[in-house]
Length: 408
Image (cartoon, rainbow, N blue to C red; front, side, top):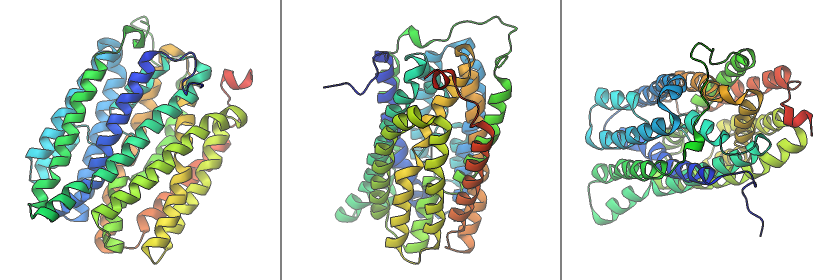
């Protein structure tokens, strides 16, 4: 039976995929649980939007620092530090009660309210994986990496309703039961820490002269990519998983158990669709794969906002989920393929940090919209921004193909 992994992949590739899957489980639990938990604490949609903003903005700043500190401390040390911060974040959310305390923990921690990966871990693991496989196999390995995260997120979302279900059945305090989700998040951080300790020195980047610019050769294309990726992320910030769950709670009075089941199915659809990404990228090119799967997905998102009933909205959201993640491995692979190996850490940081900053801007206005009306304005804003991104990406980068595409 043929292996899913390319022949050039090393055991470190598998370890990083395992950690991505565990992080996906933790993110899936907290992203659905977070709006319900904060609402139970008495917070308004606007306040929830502020806390979501804090998680994304804080992650962006830490990620920016990490991208340039990796050369000094090493990838393995940075990953170990990130895992310890994940443990501390879970403990902090379990302990804290007040709005400002939770916002501060969200700002400095690793909490991810999104179905995707916008945390400190992403550029570090992305750079490490690029050291463990040949360039021609990057898209395939990134597809498996993202499928692991998406599957983990799906099962985490499904598990997010368990504390509420168990507490309701046995008459326990629901708020106290929901805190167990953050304890689980901390435990997963410990398991990730243990797995990182098995990574070999092969993931480390080759040294470069101290006075060499971090993006000496690829600055122009990296900056252009960062700009268009930011537009996509800004749109995505209106509908990150925590806010999409909040919209469902308010628009259709959906229970956390039902929302968890929806996100589980959506996660499965998104994860399996990414296996197709590598084959499409090899045949049609990475940019074409990104654009022509993303455009219909964003059209479905806008249509979901217009639906009058939960079943109809869910149909369009699931159609969107079946396509919306197919661009992710192609995007990550494209960035790693168009820059030289010694600049990959900086390129990963510079393209991911603006995404995190841009996505951090949207949750506050999205929360304010949901304070005023339960209509799907955040979904419409997200879809419009993302369609504009697709068009710009195609126009600006379709002709700029990596060497492995031009030589095939």
